[in-house]
Amino acid sequence: MRHEDGLKVASPEQMQIWMKQTMDWIGGIAAQNKFVSGTGLPFEYARVVRSNKVVTNGPFGEIKETIGGFIVVRADSVDEAVEFAKGCPVLQGEGNSMEVRKIAKNDGVH
Image (cartoon, rainbow, N blue to C red; front, side, top):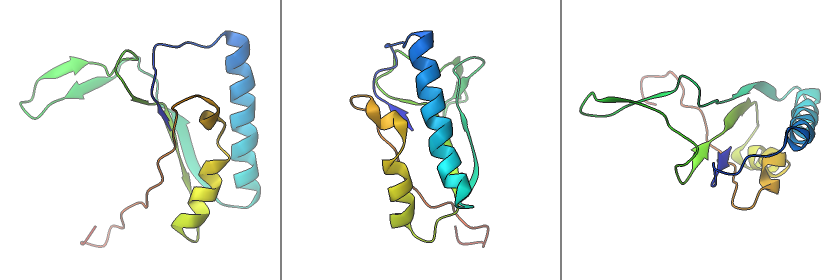
């Protein structure tokens, strides 16, 4: 789940509405026995380690795009996962997006 504008902060009431919508969305996927796991990704205690081994605090909401959370689903195809993603309440936010990827297998190739 990507959010383009990390500066905008919703009211506590709006956050409650979005959380309920998100839990209902996840519940619908779980009812199909397709939900595996997921969580939000808070900024608190986050660190960025760069290639030169420099460690900085962050990432922070003032950057252009943040990753707000993720879920793992058990889908029969990428197309099925895309259909789940289309129902995500995060897409209500202008510029927000869902990224759909396969998880690499532990098969020595991926």
